[in-house]
Length: 92
Image (cartoon, rainbow, N blue to C red; front, side, top):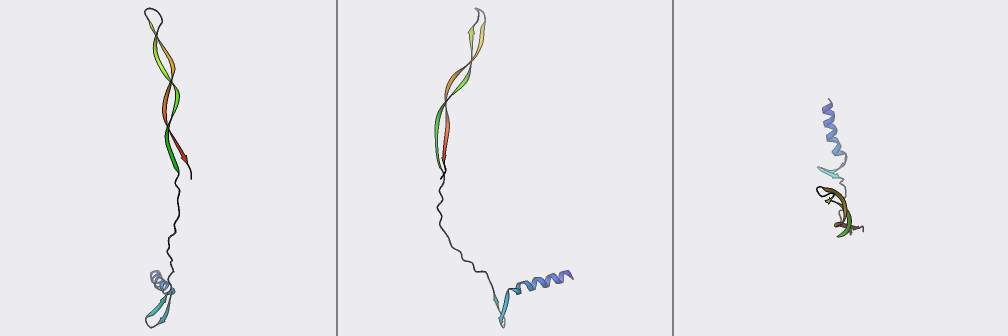
């Protein structure tokens, strides 16, 4: 019983949007679609890539004469200049 009612409802629904205008003629309403294009300008961010120099302290391990027989290990630091990448982003 349910399948019969469901089948009948499915057959009647498409006819609800139709209107009979004559013998074997139906007037069907369809949506009116207007397709057009529009132009937009998109600005991308500007990226500058370069380098910069930084100074860091690096460890140094060496030896130092303590007595005539023994060399004493010594730990210290020295300044070292390194080049690091630098990126600058300018938003539009």
